[in-house]
Amino acid sequence: LTLQSGVVRVNCIDCLDRTNVAQSVISRWMLSRQLEELGVLRPRERDAIAQGDPACFPPLQAALKQLWVEQGDVLSLQYAGSQALQTDVTLTGRRTLHGLIQDSMASVQRYVSQQVYDTSTQDLLDHLTGHKEAFVPRTQPPAPPPAPPPSLPPPPSVPPHPH
Picture (cartoon, rainbow, N blue to C red):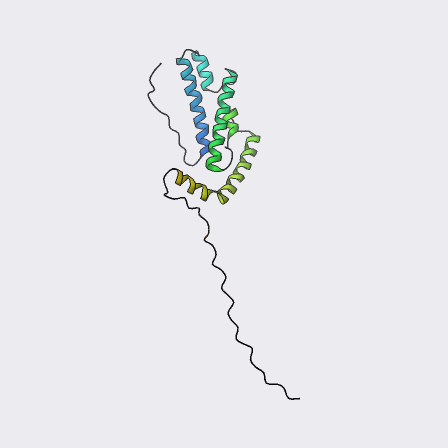
């Protein structure tokens, strides 16, 4: 065994989904290197796993891909309000029509979530992480009560009409 000598940090600030795809590729590469170091894989097998070849240890490849799809969904639900986008890329390594349709539906769900829930979710996350001292939901202040109708002057007195 060897001592870890570094850390890979991936943070694509404008796209949670691309970050997850990148991390899944890095994890596949790292797993292949670790299994080779342990003597489980030969260099040819290491390269096949690193490249995502589904013919090389199919159960391992499927489990790793499924792990990253699920992880992407959990993070995406927390931060974006929908399942992760580009899961077809994580599972198959390429874009598919089915994936594009799923991404379109998830994008609509994200838009609605952003319009309805994001403000209070951000307040809660800020509070939980210590960025705000008190959790105060952002709501519209209550409308003031309606003003009473102005009092009307009494009707003018009309003298009786002579007959």
